[in-house]
Image 1 (tube, one colour):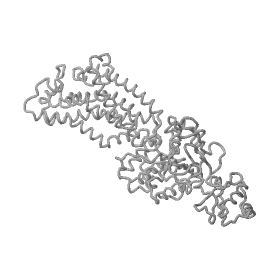
Image 2 (image 1 turned 60 degrees about the horizontal axis):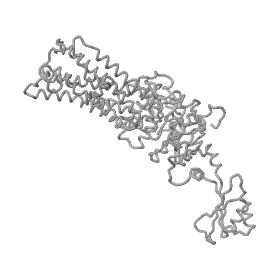
Image 3 (image 1 turned 120 degrees about the vertical axis):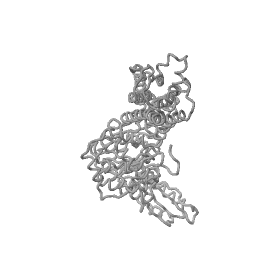
Image 4 (image 1 turned 30 degrees about the vertical axis):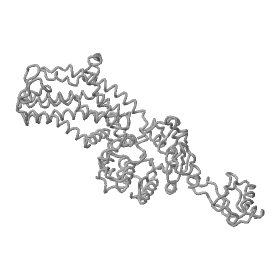
Length: 293
Length: 325
């Protein structure tokens, strides 16, 4: 450590206080870069990408056509139109794979930093507790969209590569061209990303309660499974519209002509409610928490 | 340096600061006064409450009771204004193992919204150079040794010019060369006007770089002042060697001293007595010798020993390896 003749801060450090624009958004950029530079994030995105690849390959390699009404919806249509690979893959990954990856990212937000010990350095920097919480959530939301778009995009690519592609016949009977159906695929990805925002907020809230990221991740994923189980119990019908997973599979409305936005709106409202509630818990906990990690 | 007039003369000030975890009291009503411009050694055995105090000072934990002012502002209320002026190493370095040293510093620098982006790269390079890590800037922290991580932690505290540096055990994990470098770095920072608050459980380290010392023991601040004041507060000891132990003890007791046997050999040929002067009542050494001789005590050896800071430290914090806690 070169003790330079007495002067405390070096020239660059001194210049820092004199000039330069404060970077209020720099932490968001840094957060995303940390998230997407992790091997784990890439492993999860690769696993998600493997789902449409698996579906497309399996259908391609089967000689006899898939009988309708067997397997996930749209599966029987893939061999005629590759654009259905992405939609099938999204449908398949909604119950477990997408919540699993979102649970990992959201559960890691605060608990992961606490576990590394970097949380105390971020707060002393000072990041500001509320600002850090907002940025962590924003990054988790970005991951939700990345995850669903990954499934959709890889699905489209695999479909184009392995199957004929043409105009898509919608549930309403109307036919849309390839460009329009790509747009619909993206819309479904966006719908699913919004669907996962409530779960991400729950994961963030859980993450403020522990220094063990795996615990927060597991709890988040377990909650998502429990919500879906509850949604399948007729005895709990009164509860169904309040479950954050209630609309997860209801993106069929986006495959009608004209698009029915009712489900999208209802779902967004529900997720917004969960964001507010879980956000309030996360805020209450995190702003008053003693950081002892 | 020791100008204590006005509240702004203190970089850190706490009043009755306490922190309890459940029923256990980690920090017990301490009144810290760290003058601006000082190098304040925060000394205490492991588990004496040093790191908890530092967490309270930096707003990481909320006090159970008592008040804190850092750089003239109340904590935690004024944290947003205080923390940009404070560089800190708290309870060891912590970094993202999958990022390089430089990337870690950039990451932590972005967390401070007042840190200008335009100078970020230059400031990171400079901080790495100051701690001698330029050669490992691009290496993943996963591959760093403990000493290198410690250096990186110090570099993080130096990313911006700071009014106050809080360094919790900065020489942990460093080799003797690294320890010397930290000492000279602290001195150069202090020479530049930065107040340095450095915690340590090593007395020698504090003695070598600090102007002021505060001693913690079991959550209490048991002594505080300049290094000189603390040394002076230590009680002198008188070592007497005599074969007439019983007679000497009677004479010393008569003078108001408290003689204690010292040494392993306590037979009549090689007797030894250790006497500690009672505080506030010191008898001049020459009078003691005169009294001993007058009483017919054969004096084989006589010496006055100033208390070392180490003895003072041990007497304040207790001896041995017991971790308070």
